[in-house]
Image (cartoon, rainbow, N blue to C red; front, top):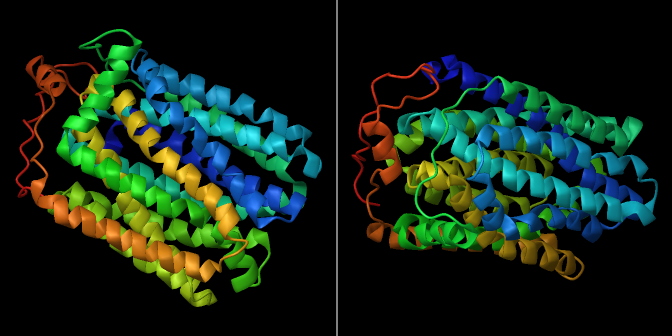
Length: 430
């Protein structure tokens, strides 16, 4: 990991992403709190998250265009567009204006889909396969670690100056991130294979369908999001009815989860090297189930411990998820595959949030959390039962071509460093 941090381009990317994450977490929290304050409704506050996830439905189409352009430029343009998208929040004054918050949430979600698809490809073009797990883990750790500061800062800023001040902070971090990206260097990726919108779109979907471990991961994650969406709404009932705290207390819980995310992001790379990405995902789901089940007690010390545990487990799940996709996918189609996977589980996630808005009015949050815990354990069981049929990974054709040409990572910038070793996974088939 020390060598990774010495890579100037990765270091610039890391710093820019960390600052941007600070603004994002502050803003994301503020959007839900803002709706809760304006309307007094737990359901409407939870629904502020729904527009954010809807753009993933068109993710595969967006991924096709992401793969057509230099990823760094796409990320810079997206950062600047996201900063502009926050401007309408300056005109929110009362409950009649909450539609503006929903629209901005949608635009930020759209920017996130494009940005994350481009970043996945940028990392693969910059780094060797052996560095991907640590690189994703460090990004997860520092970004999620902003939960230690951003939620509290966002809630405090919201309480003192209102949501418009938080929007200004987030816009500034987007601009700073774009400035850091201007100094990042990464090799250009040649487009390979089929050309044209529909052939390129089908190629990304076919890759997921024909790669056994990606197919199982996609199914499992769709089920995870079906359970997780309800939690976005239930958290307000937990805070209000269970802990008897104001909506701003969500900032405290997010900070506790951030502590766990920092820990998880630091150690997940070593964990994946020992047991593999698939097993890491499975054990993460078990830990998430236990943590979510603990929330049903609604006792403050238990809830805080649960938040930390869930933060660690979510960090493990996210990093292993992204790394597995990157390592099984050609560099030239990273955007399409990443956004296609996102789209597959956006529908259940959106449906889950909508269902949560209805359920929270008639079902106890305790029942919801216990049901979610059972579902997470069931998904972990599904992955365990199917693990023996997961095929061992092999290098993608695009990676073999790049190695044959002797292309190096951005760590050498100038070029002819020794190509990375052929990826041979010593772990038994999972």
